[in-house]
Length: 344
Image: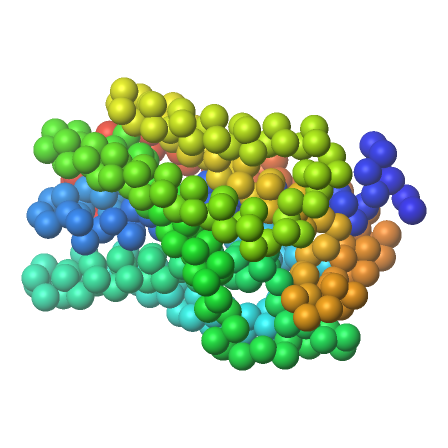
């Protein structure tokens, strides 16, 4: 099998897709977390400030999700077909929630009526929570395994997705995004809103630590295939140690009000958790809970080597461009949020 730097092409694409999903989580994660916290702010000025904190960047952050979906289709078309057909209803709800989040942000400021703004505030908060919850639910089911038969068809029903482990992963994802969003907002605000956010950050950190502990215990006890790689390669145990170290540093920096450092550590723990997830799955992408022989590996699902090589070159050119755009936007809109006549 053809390799680049000693790594075969399907594995390269597995890494590329994982990197894109991680980028989406780190960037759109704080947008979604900010939306999930939106109704905690009671004053009109506070809600406008937190909306304008994410206003210049939220739509650009979603680009990473679009690229990740395109990369999955290009690199592993079989997996794309199986996942999108299996999660058809959750993904339709996900798209509806994405639409409502977008129009809530854009429509809210179009009229001054109190009921109008309250309606879009609720829509923004609910859609942000729903997007995050569905992302966690899909991730949890991919870890847990899906009832896939030998024809690569999903044999479960809608209730199959709502197993206890996947629900726990969904709540953990929500907790992490809320923490990520609260830290971002506290960096962008000042005065009384800043003081309120310091309390929210502290509460969100406690919520996430609790979910992290419960998820770790549940994975070790009920999802044995996620620990096989670590048993076979003990050197990989350093990754869970880094995750725990990072979690402790988030709490330490939140308590010390070093919010920029806490934000960087929340990005790191998000990366660590997704890396642990990828290691547990590899070389599979979709695990069958009914028969391991029905699981889909990257080698079974990959496009031809020629296609993978061409697309890898395109990714090598395109990814730095997206990164440059992202850095430029964040640099341009750095600093505390100030309201003016152009604000939401």
